[in-house]
Length: 286
Image (cartoon, rainbow, N blue to C red; front, side, top):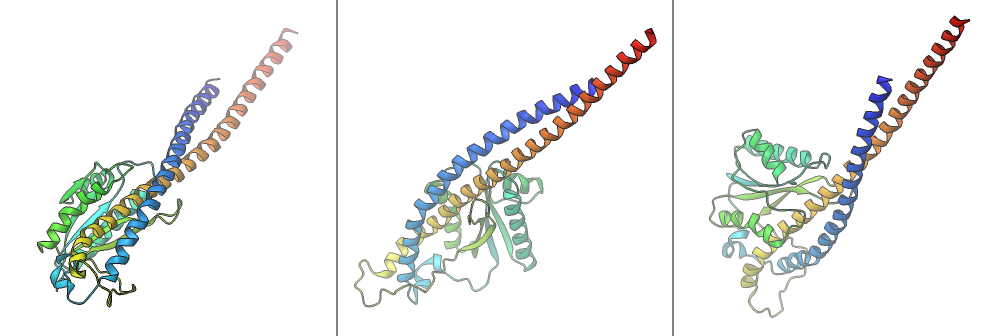
């Protein structure tokens, strides 16, 4: 009887856990939809800035705009790592942290000084535990990042690059391909290197002049790149959490089935034993 009661307690515990994981799955699904809407809303603005910047590209702009400066040698690199503030999202944070570690180790192996900047509690907790120096950390960005959050991250890095205190900025974030696929991605965001596959504005009258326009666009373009990375990270986190909680819910259901079978076997064995004792007692009285 004691064994059956123990199995019943375990069944009750697993059922309570399944309720929690099922609720977390539903919440993550709802947040994922909103995060994907924010991704879709941010895309046109970023694409327009990218197209305009490529159109205005012209020789000699690197000397006029510090954000386009190509260092002769890379001696110091800032690594910007974007992670989540919470767990229960599978290997989402672990993959980003692993990518950051590999990048830092690769830079150090080349003799380059790596300066770590982190957004998210999970990344900060990990590197603090390992004793890795963190130049700057931001743990206040929630599930709904804003352009102001992006500016808070990239502003100091932009200023340091313009002052030639760092030679490049590498950003590590998740690439949202689908709700089930959010691999880490490394992207060099400074210096800005516009692509050249856009129609040039040569032959058009542009006011203000292209060089001045580029100076105005570059900070906004850089902010949009980081903002899009933040919203992709938020969507990737919710997608990973939904998948992890669904898996946990399914596993809890299987565990309940197994425990129920164990309980039924224990009850059957107990009833059989009681019947045998009754029959044996009756036989003894005869």
